[in-house]
Length: 177
Image (cartoon, rainbow, N blue to C red):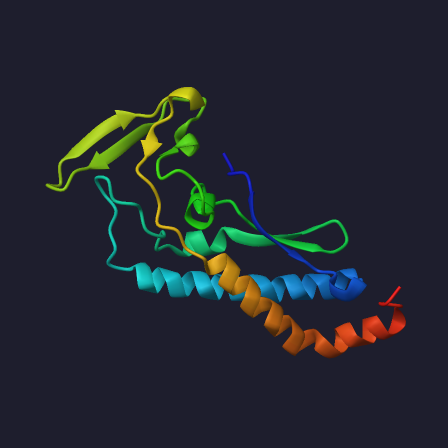
């Protein structure tokens, strides 16, 4: 079953009432996504050695699949959205959530078995609940701001890379209507 995409950040692509054409907006989205992924990799390196467990928050997943789960989509005519299919991406990036979170990603129509490895190496097998109302609660997640840093650095890279192209588009439009 493929995971649904979760919207993590929207970058408004219409400053000074300049309407970017679709190809330019898509180039900008690719540049911003690349910057976000670079910031994810930096945070993954920083998080190495941090371990969750017990009542400790879980650090960022150290997996290429986590990085690859991030993509962009264009919403409307001018908004770039950074989205992810990773089940816990929102918990890692969204401030203000309760520390404990229902693990709704484990709830599935079929019974799912989850192996739990204790500190001594003993494996305990548990079955995940079938409904969201009875979902297990996770102790929490370490929060990261790679989305914000990546979006900020990506917007600057867009200006550095596509600045002249954006100015050419602005020259064709009346930006001070």
